[in-house]
Image (cartoon, rainbow, N blue to C red; front, side):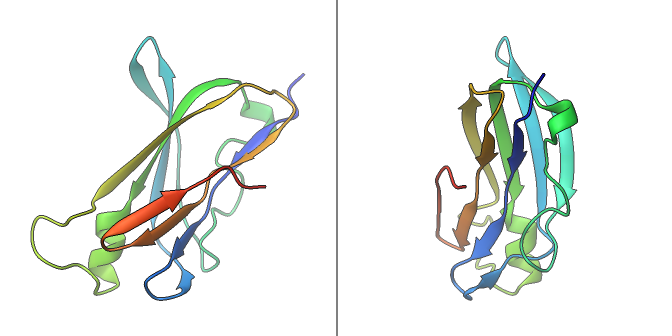
Length: 119
C-alpha cells in the first residue's frame, strides 16, 4: 500500500509573497503521453488546499506539473509585453518511493523561476 503523496506551492519572489490564485495541473507521463491527473488553484498561502496527489491516489512514475504563471502574472500586474517571457511553466520529475512525501515548489518572478525537491 502506498503512503506517499505530492504537494506543491508557489512563491512570488518578485513581490515576496505567496502566489494566490495560480492554476496548477498535474499530468502522469505514460509512454511519452501526458495524462491529466489533477488540477488545483493555489490558496492565500500559495499552496493547494490538499495534496495535488493524495495518498489514496499516489503511484510512482514520471509526472509533470504545469503552472499557469502567465495568468497569475497578468492578474498581479507584473506582465510585461506580449507574449510574456514566462507563461506555462512545466516541471517534469520522477517519484520512485511509494512511501515518501514529494514536495515540488515553484519560486516565480516575471523573468525567472526555480524549483527543487522540498519537504
